[in-house]
Image (cartoon, rainbow, N blue to C red; front, side):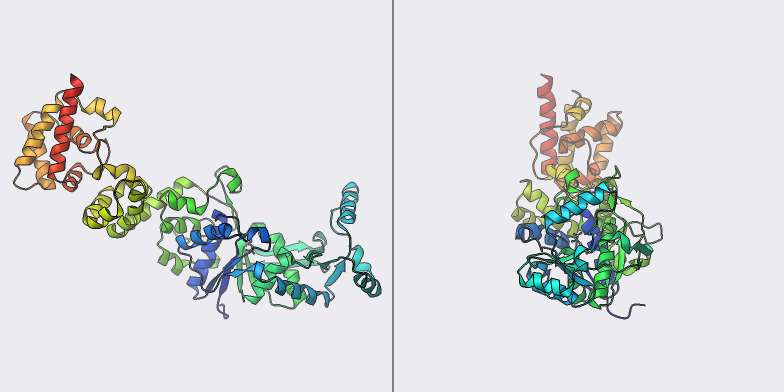
Length: 482
Ligand code: GLU
């Protein structure tokens, strides 16, 4: 059992977008924090000054917010903590693990070429580890530039991974890493260790592409005399073609899924199952259920494939679970931005909009589909689906549609049941199948051949609209016939 309160973090580099892999890591860390009553922290790894522009950071934070991954403390920016890293690099110099390296870039290049020619691993040959303290002092006093390196101790190194179990690497395979550059700036691994330690991070869950960094970081914790956090490396997310997901290959920014009408709950649910399982057959989970169920024991080490079709099917399930009113609020911006109806109008006739959303809900896969499938509830310009028109608007239908309109007008009350009874009676009278009237009526009222149940649709549209559309379709058929 964990005794210290859990503190976990997500540490994105400012790339201008939230990659699905980083989003999935954020989901795991957030769920773990919420499950265990701990804290979820955000750190921006912007040591590279070029990258700390707000436009590269803001999309990441907005995607985390959209996913509902709220963080608990102020966001930490590495660019503002460079002094701390410099102090730690100096501290390491005072231990047997740190040393100054005066080798020039040119010298290092030559060493590397020689190593390659001799078929040796191109790692630093420790030339400067052999310098005497006097010589080091002389060169420093003479103003020679140096980097600070960490001497990697001999022997194998093992750490206990929460996902993969014990992982071992031979120290001989790791080169003495640079902690601080000649201008005093810290390198990635030092900054990460200093931050994770000072932030009190207890568990580090991240992609397994960081395992080589972890070995270096474990040495750094030791050199600094700090306790190790627990590490857990999750499998990478692959594309269906088994390549690693990447923006370069056209994989999307998480923000893009919002634009396309994916619900944050669906995205959270789907990402969570890429590398974690509840060990049951259940796949669709609400956020609260995931918080309750998530434990690091159920993380798995095998690579997961990001399948957009599956995400969309999760989206469909989550749409079905949403109460109509809530769904209407989420769908409204799509109608407004498509210029179908104003926000004002939607607010004024909210009940109507909720009914529209409720009627269409079963047929959509994304929030944006509501617009495509429901535009005729707001605008109709008398254009009919070309294929359906050929089939349904045969010349004999003009009279039938007019008759149906007349009978609807004569009904004492226009309800969905009455509309159905009336249509059935007319079909029977004429010795027609119901379908022979249902399909043209649907096309007349909506311009489309698919949609919600016909009578639900007619009921929502209201009698005057239905009658007018039936008559217009009849005129259209007549006109076309001429
Ligand atoms: N900045 C790293 C990344 O974006 C994360 C490093 C970490 O989690 O330690 O992959």
